[in-house]
Amino acid sequence: MSLQDDLTAVRRNLNELVRSVERLERDVKNTERQAPGASRAPGEGAMVGVVEVPDTPYDSSLWTDADDEGLGARDRRAP
Image (cartoon, rainbow, N blue to C red; front, side, top):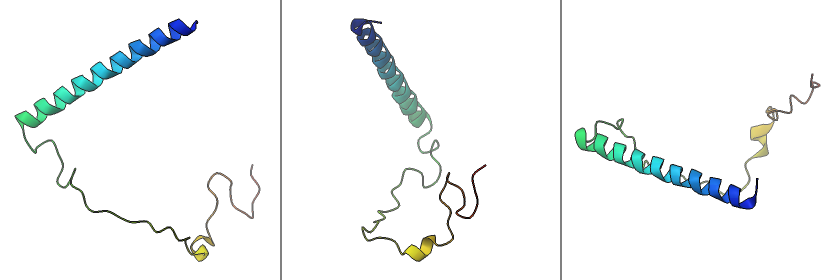
């Protein structure tokens, strides 16, 4: 494929994505207009609050018995 063909394919896919998002936005607006508040679960969409995560390192004793995911346990060999 040439560069021009690639750019044409990207433009076509991007235009299709824009149309899909616009259609989804219309569907959501129509759903909310038909039954306001009914499309959401209780509490959904409401901000619960901001949880701050400290920059300080965690206590290393939290990880004493933890295994590294995907690497297996320290005292066993991988199959």
